[in-house]
Image 1 (cartoon, rainbow, N blue to C red):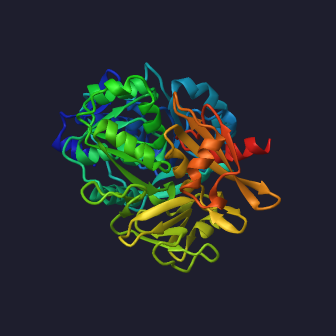
Image 2 (cartoon, one colour):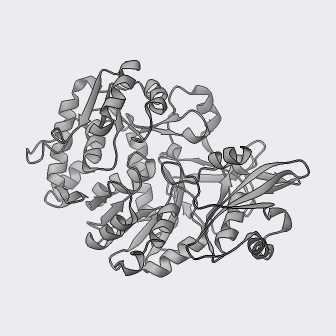
Image 3 (cartoon, one colour):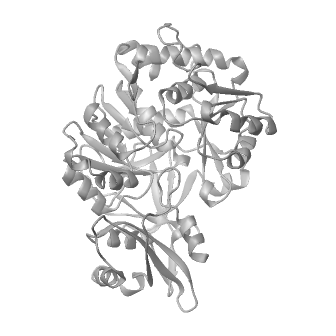
Length: 491
């Protein structure tokens, strides 16, 4: 895709970050130059990428692929302790990193037997091949491994998801069938570029449509809003956390959103009230989708041109089969409207977890990826995600899906964000506890929220306890961290 974009639109700006920009012709030259710098020694192996959001990160990602290696994107905010087990598991031939974390990474590399640490320092930028007219050599084979995406670190030791070039490139086209891009879109990516969402909805989307990718190096609401206006952004890859944060900023009301044609929402469930507020304030539609790293990552999306259903994550991508099956055996498809575990199959599904044969066998059964998510289809084939299987609470013998309760809480005009967890209860088995963040100037107490929920939910779905807080704990990619909430509750 990148080589094609350089051939067809070489003078078009491909990447922007701050005041810096790079055309497609120079983007490809830098990728080719970096691939040569990596050398033949990485071919068929892995190269870890420990970098923040930058033009260099985009070059490094494609450069690793051009060198015939598998990219291993990792969180640059991780400590040496957090990275050591992941690097040991990945066994990369080299680590490419920002200069700021190079010294921290060198002992990790030495402990794990990694021979090279390449720092993209100010005097050794990966843009240094710009203008040299270089081109990559042999293209990767479709069946070759492209990405080793580590996931699940908040629930235990992180698992590495193996994805082939065929899987991720097919998934770009699958997503494009539901969300067709125009020629030369202006795309904004704010979420971390080591995450599958940013890779799919930014790093790969831009060369597909020969568009310009604007990269925000570090998320700040004012910088993000300014970029939307000044770069005339047409496509915004957002998330619930981003939408809430931007709408709460003082500059939001004065921002010109007239260029914005479509917002995507992914990474975690989008409350209906947040979607409605964003669409009303910006005049820009939001298409919510669903997937996971193990699925390339996109499985469904609300179509850009067609029926969008609020609260739904949309319809299946082409070539993708999704079933909702019983929770006990995971083999019996359930009727329309009945909630169960979501399983999927298609060409975008992972090859398996690295070094995890047992967990691969548990996730991939009879050709189906068992997602661990709970959902239900409506009569029109639109999928509604209720939450994670492990988050489901059983209150007095009844299954309760926290997302339903969170949606009801977020519908209250004073509530900005909410998270609901199940905790042990001697009488009911489990009881619900709601953690609530109020909007600036919003006023509500437990009694007010309980009264509001009483008109929307049956009694056993109403939380037993309400905890008001200034903010909810989040993972590095902005998901509400329920593991941290449960740990805090126990303490």
